[in-house]
Image (cartoon, rainbow, N blue to C red):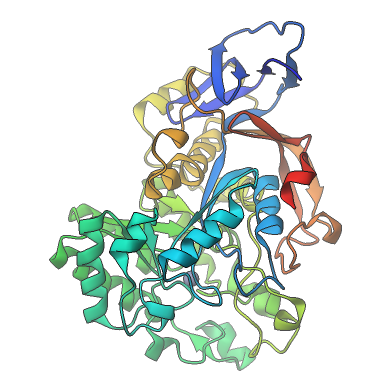
Length: 466
Ligand SMILES: [Zn+2]
């Protein structure tokens, strides 16, 4: 057994900015960070030259399909996919069969996941069985560690119940996370409403199905003086509503997904159900607006909405196919690959903390442009310490690469690139929108609580994932 892990030659990126330093890990913690660490006998040395060393990721939106949907994903396969994507922790969504609406079901899930190499947190449903009729027992859910409640999969329609949920949960320190969707506007929709849906003759989902509920819930949160979190916002207008609410000092936070940042409705032109997702892929103008809002701080977190489905639910006519796509394994790499297109549109990061900005300005030969690394920092913050804050993970995920901090780290190799093959997908399901696509960069190493889980992009500790 080695005594330390020493990571050398990489560019460190954390919540305070960029610096070129080596680091050593002893036990579960980072023990040393300095410009040059000489490995000694017994150290395990990881060469990170040309790579970025960053806090590991936290996904605030994962469908692990357990219990009841194990045909599509299990705790073991879902967390494997997460590890390959650079995640040290994921939040399991409660739209399972049965729904996670009671302390015993939450405890059962957490116990089943306790031995896995990465951390699984659980959210609970806002309403009993996600039926939108009766609130879940928030107090006893809080007692077993629930920090987020959501009826994700559908929106909570009843405004009165939503108001009550906001009031009770704010007293308990629980975040209410809304899947914003007005069912009367959504109807039997399949894809974004617009010219393309009309041409294809497919039932449309108007942008207003999302925006009307965002507007309603902002007002409910304001009047209740409560906190609200919006999952997977997909339209320019939704983001704008959140930006204005923040300006009004309403306690609102919001999530955006990698697929809404990188894919447009055009992918449905051939009726390919792989790209059927809820909320639907939108227009190029929406994508541009979502990046602008990411760059100005409107979005607090990037969540994958990793949604595995068995083939038979996806390989059907578009109308009948299930909503959702895989995300965990390729989210960061997909976003990194998108940065050149964002910069080609002339989109620059608007809001960068001063310390981060000056660390970038003072960086020698970073090998990437200032703007590329500014976007990288924005993406990283929304995938790592910001979701950890949302989930109340406290000291274990501070986003600081400093001695004494728990060693939850990713080494990213920006120069690697690969075409995503079917064999490389480790989810039980195969509905990945990245299949066959060439992506730039790769997650080379993952260290969680001082344990090395990835080596050169390959999973270690296979036995612990059974
Ligand atoms: Zn959802």
